[in-house]
Amino acid sequence: MNKTKGVAGSRRKQPERRCVGCREMKNKIDLMRIVRNADDSGFYVDDTGKVAGRGAYICCDADCFKKAVKSGGFDRSFKQKIPQEVYATLEGMVNNE
Ligand SMILES: [Zn+2]
Image 1 (cartoon, rainbow, N blue to C red):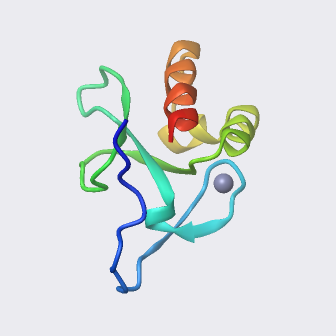
Image 2 (image 1 turned 90 degrees about the vertical axis):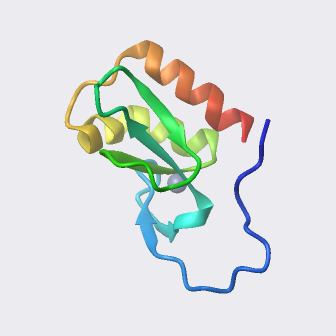
Image 3 (image 1 turned 180 degrees about the horizontal axis):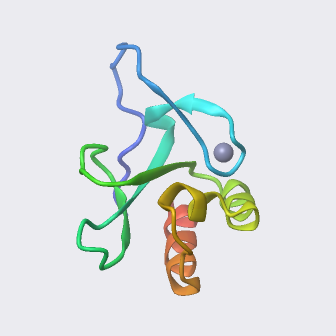
């Protein structure tokens, strides 16, 4: 497991993004970015925050994840229905953070 959050010593003001689960604006570095591959082959967590493509932000929190699934937040963000197996994979990632 590699921890990529909590960049120590960075005092720069970070941009804010909205969590698709709780819908709250949070510091970008406190959120996990989920990106859809440009070739639509799947979804993955963007640890760098620099990957091009459509993305969604979510707190590293299982509750937020459940809310996002329930409310269809991911579906809206990606403008498509997210397959069940993708949710399962993403949930595993959220819980691993
Ligand atoms: Zn949240």
